[in-house]
Picture 1: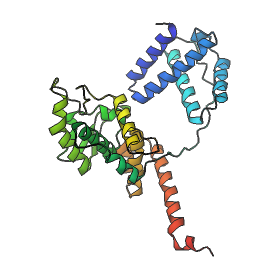
Picture 2: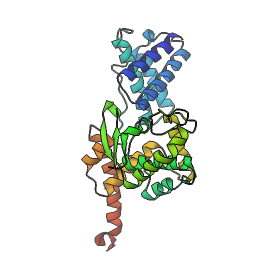
Picture 3: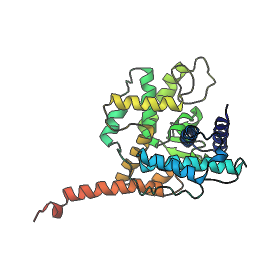
Picture 4: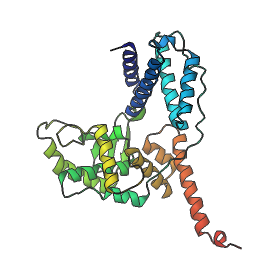
Length: 304
C-alpha cells in the first residue's frame, strides 16, 4: 500500500467513524482517488507538495472536461474534505483548498421523476408466481410505500417490521437517526407473505440470520445487489427514465405531495433534518399544478 492508498484508506475509515452514509463514503473515496491519480500523472507523489495553485489547475481540468456543475462541485468537495482530514490529523500544515471557490449550484429541480403509471408498471413487473418474484415485489412495494434509502432497506431486520400494525422501524438512518414509518396495506401483505413463505427457503443454511431481505445464496442482500435488482425491473418494465432506489424515493415524495400530504410530514418520512431538500419536490409539484391550471382553467382556455 503506497502513501496515497494509505491516506485514502484512513480517510474512508474516518468517514465511517463519523457515520456518513454509504453513498457519501463511496463518492468521496472515488473522487479523492481520481484526484490522487491526477497528482501522480503530474509527478506529485506526496500530498504535502500540493499547493493552492495545483488545486486550481485540477479545477481547471474539470472545466475542460465539461463536467456538470453538480459533478464539478462534488469532485472539489471530496478533495476539500480529504485535505481537511489530513490537516486535522497533522499530515499537512495547511489545507490548499481553503480558499478555493466552488461553482454555484443554484436550485436544481429533481429530474426524470417517475409518474404514478410508471410506478404501477414497475411494481407489477416481478413474477409473483416464483419465490424470487415475491421477494422482489415485496422490496419494490416497501420502497415505494415508505421512501426509505437503499442502505436503510438493506439494513432492515425481521424485528423492524410490524406488518400487523403497519409500521416499519428504520435503525441508524442518515445521520444515525432512528425513525418509525407507516407502511401501506399492500406492502404489508407482501412483507407478511415473504416472511412466512419465501424467506425460510433462503435461510435454511443460516436460520439465525435476522436480516429481512436475503439473497438467493442465503446471505443478506447487499446494497449493490439491490441497486442491480431495481435497475433490472426498470428495464423489464420498459421505463425510459433512470430507475433506481432513489428514483423510487423521489416518486414517493412527489406523489404524496401531489395528493395533498403536508411537506413537514414528507420531511419526517424521508428522514430529512432540513426543509431545503423537501422544497425541491414542492417546486416540482408547483410546476405541475401550473401546467394543469393553464390547461384546464376556463379563463386560460379562452384565447380571446
